[in-house]
Amino acid sequence: MIFSTSCQKRQDKTLERNLFTFLISCTGGSLDACNADCAAKYPDVTGVNYPAASACFSACSTNCNLSTTLLLLTNK
Image (tube, rainbow, N blue to C red):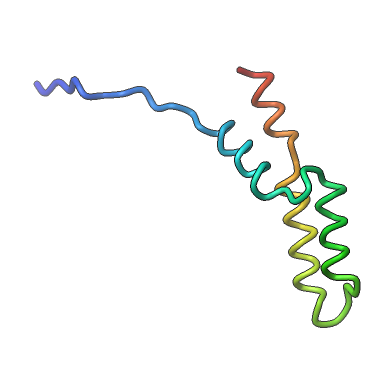
């Protein structure tokens, strides 16, 4: 029989990662501020600017969403 004495419990870092992503990636600290920054960067959302503007607004929606983080806080 083989016994392992070096096993460690896996720590869940999801909450810390979500908070870190929010702090680093959510420009301005809120969805409105992030979207305003994208609008300032890409005032013309047509033509060649469309892919970059779309990616910027999409990143805001993803990175500034605290719903998942707040749900994790309430479940701890």
